[in-house]
Length: 99
Image 1 (cartoon, rainbow, N blue to C red):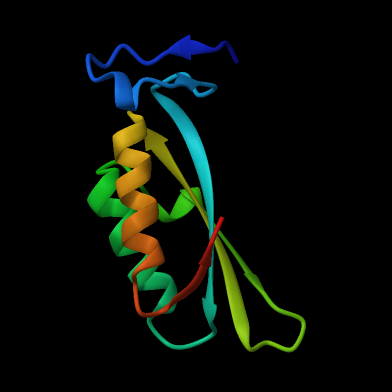
Image 2: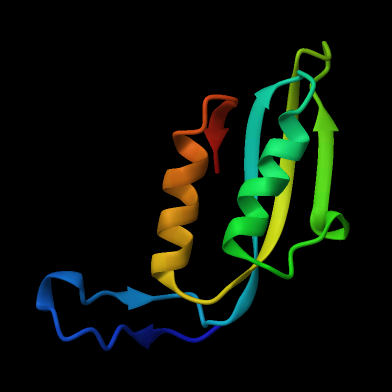
């Protein structure tokens, strides 16, 4: 990956990015192992990446079976898209942690 400066005209938002867009970007989301959790995460992913499919999904159950770790891999097109996706997932009532 190469570092490419953000070309935003607002100096407050100018930062160098280590991500070159567009790219495939994995996001790990953890929550309680309850009915509808995986579907809820897929619905959010689809809202930010219309090409998202369940083929881009990996689910792992915790050792005791109380939690699910879901890795979604989306087509990231901008830092703004990723920031908003992280905000949306972090505030979702079924989500405990987003990495």
